[in-house]
Length: 516
Ligand code: NAD
Image 1 (cartoon, rainbow, N blue to C red):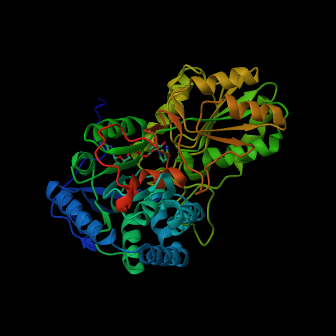
Image 2 (image 1 turned 45 degrees about the vertical axis):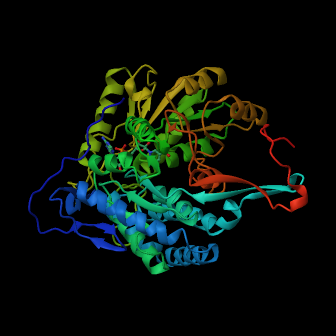
Image 3 (image 1 turned 30 degrees about the horizontal axis):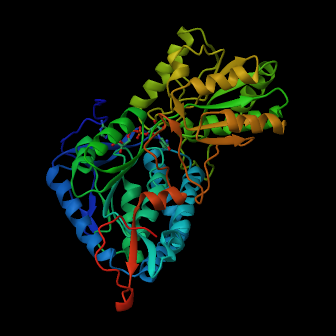
């Protein structure tokens, strides 16, 4: 089993700052654990609050409340559940700017990007509004004389969701609208780095009419996660985060008899064929490489340039980097930058170390973001857009996920060489090919070992009615997020074989196996 250490050191220092609470029994629940972690505004580097870190008593209270919520909610008719879903969608749509501001203040991404993540989450809410169609069963009449077979889909019970810092609204929304629509009660353990979006969403559910206990927010670290993974009252776990933790979640929750989907890290390549439109490629590489400061699981982190295009492409990317504005994601004097800071100072050091490693291994640092500062925000966790060329594929800067605004160019001689590099990596989340050759693109979609593929599209996140998920170490378990996979994951099917006897058709005693 993978062993992993907690990422945030608990602190019990006394402070005047707000302690961000749990949401239990339909209301904020102040923590009594005495354990907290700091929450930063990454653009200023200041601690703006502390977040509660649950102890066992709080974990138990959260799960008990969810059990009671499930008992009530699973008895609601489909029509009443649907009314709550529609009310939630309307409230979210009309008030999403409030949520975007919360995301920007704790995550750092620019406001328009925060709005974008909410919209992609809202898509799943909208899909979930049509849930009756997706959870209805099937009926086969007269499979044998006088016998009918039908199937129904029932909720699991209490389901756990554990989410990462980089999409504090969208990733939970990949799961909870569908889980709730299907009749489950959700316990969400958000990232301790940006925990407030989950509380805002919880209050919105209350306003939409969701009964208490159906949506619970359990703030915490490894202790809270392990509490969910091992509780006999939690039926399933939906996890999104880094690969070592995803593997740990998958192994531990499976061992405790749960249904698990655990989405992990990524290293997404963009394969550029010589016939591609290089202006489109350069725009796409910059948008997909540096958007959200590279803290997206679908970010492009490697450009595989099939020669002879590398020199021209690098010049175009470099020119575009020169035009990027970096600053506080909330904007200054109403002007929004293109890119905000990284999530923490610790993470910034890690990203910087990867650039050191690439350089030491022989890569050429074309644009260097190390030591980058924003005037007037010198304590913010900023890291400048970084462009590396000739990155050796043996370097850890190539093989591992950096999760920062660092774009690596690897020069290859052919489509086959590029494909082989993509397929030999440990991850298989997303990839993209840029070409005007339909035959090559078709070959690529067939031959590449990756779960989500873009053809002249750099961040191919599927829409809500398709499902999201990678291959290899980017997804542990069988079920992807949302779409039909989501409804299958959050329901259990029953098949019923039924006969209404009339006396004449009674077959008497027969110990043989039932036949048609
Ligand atoms: P993370 O793995 O550090 O944390 C994710 C969650 O796990 C958090 O809620 C955290 O509290 C919890 N956690 C952390 N350490 C733990 C431990 N030792 N034991 C139990 N629980 C623990 O990930 P992160 O830094 O928050 O997010 C970034 C990562 O998520 C990147 O690797 C990114 O690629 C990945 N990600 C993947 C997808 C995807 O769809 N595949 C989507 C978004 C993010």
